[in-house]
Amino acid sequence: MKWQELNSERCSIARALYVVGDRWTILVLRECYRGVTRFDKFESRLKIPRRILSERLKKLVEEGLLVKEQYQNHRLRFDYLLTDKGWELRPVLLSLLAWGDKYLAEGEPPMSLRHEACGHVTVPALVCSACGEPVDPREIKSFPTHKAAPKTEAG
Amino acid sequence: MKWQELNSERCSIARALYVVGDRWTILVLRECYRGVTRFDKFESRLKIPRRILSERLKKLVEEGLLVKEQYQNHRLRFDYLLTDKGWELRPVLLSLLAWGDKYLAEGEPPMSLRHEACGHVTVPALVCSACGEPVDPREIKSFPTHKAAPKTEAG
DNA sequence: CTTGTAAGTTTTAAAAGTGAACTTAAAAGT
DNA sequence: ACTTTTAAGTTCACTTTTAAAACTTACAAG
Image (cartoon, rainbow over all chains, first blue to last red):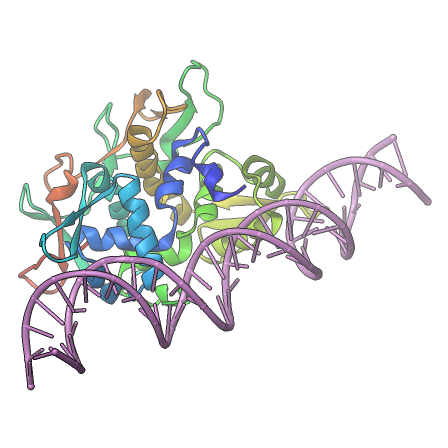
């Protein structure tokens, strides 16, 4: 399977991977969430080859996660700004962070999160939209949308 | 930056990407969550090159997300089974699924999720561990763990 | 003793990534 | 007026990774 083909799969995970399924793209988004908006800042913080950075930013703009805005109209300088679509991918990174903090960090994780709305340090976690209870990953079953009787199929 | 180096970064996102930061690994995990446990099943469902599958399974075992168990002791046949560490990565895939369903699906998503604990169809979402409210991705700020005064730094 | 199946490994070609040097365009220094 | 600097890329030569197909090993059944 070629990577182009991912984009035409039915599964939303496969389609999402077509857009953000490589490491550099995720790291670029991480920097976006940290407030980075400019080419040279991405470059110096990530030590990413310029060609790769250029490609990834272009793709993120094409896919609508970022918009490119000239911020001084007499100079060729640009801001890459998150759209709603870009912001809404953040739960993926937050989940990845929580997992990494739990299983991969040596000692205490270097960064903590605060929920600005309530002012407290937070570790966001998934809850069920129906019952509001925390989700145990073993207790989620996926099934074809239009068939009442689910097998052991997938999300 | 080489990919090996990701593993020695402080950031848990970078470290997590070292383990699961490529598309095939995510797709292999997707199949695990769907109940797939055997080499040939992964192969036929994903149309993944055998060498890549072999490598990815090996890495997932090394990193402790899967365990390899011989299930007939007189034949060389194996089950790849999720560990807790593997199961707990599922929120990442569930978040990716939710995002893909919202922004990339054509019409209705092909798969739905049910929360076995409550019996209802569900779209898991992040809530704040402190206040219990749904998390707006723009309202999470990250800051260095041991410094009281956070800048615009990052999760 | 040939065929089938599970779980790989090897091989070769194509694609993607890397690092350094080059480009463009305007602005600021001397 | 010229040189340097900064931002944002692009181009080029080289290395690594991936893809698709063929080959291997181990055992079992017919």
